[in-house]
Length: 324
Image 1 (cartoon, helix red, strand yellow):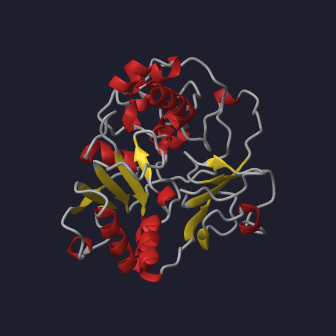
Image 2: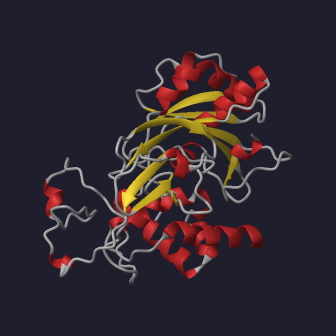
Image 3: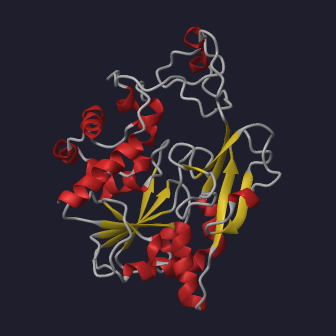
């Protein structure tokens, strides 16, 4: 179970010889089509408390429990260790990302590392020390326009998704994503298994169609962060998203798209440009060490240049880790 812990920065499995500056336990999920963690955690409340207290023994510093405002009522009254605190976050995605919580509560640096853990893994810690058995159950949310019956599934860590999704998908060419549609991993042989840190499965239709003069379309069934389509007039309209990016890679144009979706106190346009050109010194000074791939997923979604910022960030973080 040690491998369920991750560090920030760099998102690595921590060394047992290290002592974290803090530990973050995420009790919320703001990703599209994600489940409500409270539905699962309430079923194992005693194990969750036990697991949190076990984590509290690994550091004399703070252990932050991060929940959605209004959820987990009474959590602060549980018998937690003295260094455990409950913190509320609200708002749209990415309010539920651990990177957001770290940024506002206890920012990291090259010389200050924190550890993070998901709530289902913390439950597993508690069950291990209560029963002596490893709990490898995992509840995941199945969703997306190509799922016949979107719902919660009770399965195993690392489940074979080909078997799990048998007769669950609509006909056609589908893309199964382990994790969020924004930051998940495409499922394909031989890696057709549920990701170790993933809590949802998303299924989209492969968008291979290229409409004639699509750029002139009024966009009655498309979404744009810039509000250039008619759908911007119907805020509640649900759209069947596909995998198409509606264009190929092009120049990065600073039109304010990143600033509208970035809640962190950073300069996103300048940071992203430094990541693209591999200027790691500038990237570090602009906050790259506080980020994981999922923290830039919305930037990828709204990017006019169609850049994949997750892999770009990972390449830069790997260089920083090797050279410092």
